[in-house]
Image (cartoon, rainbow, N blue to C red; front, top):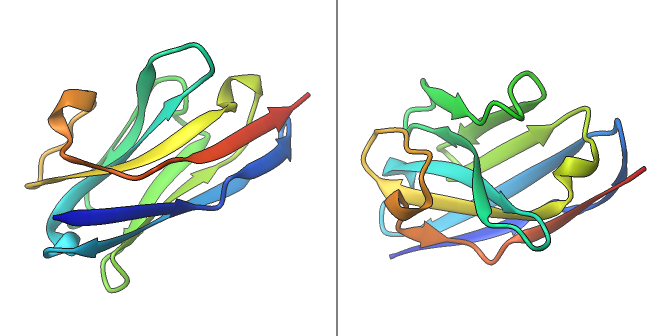
Length: 124
């Protein structure tokens, strides 16, 4: 089992930045592909970004490319999501996720472990 705990959410003005963190613990948590999804009010949960266990490969949703950066620190078994140039579409609950292996996935069904989520609200 892997436990995931997100932090760093909050209120930010449009155009601003925010950095989310996700601390992983449990069974060899540093050997997992990790990712972020988000769920806006009244909408389905959607893929944001993913990173392989080595950190050498990443994948992003088109809507966040060039503005968001995913990274990880395997010594701390923590991953991060740096979000820049946030707009109203960024308002959502952001979820940290993980799965075994070293392949990038963008579909929710491919991930095994989920955090409780952290709220991000972008004000205009």
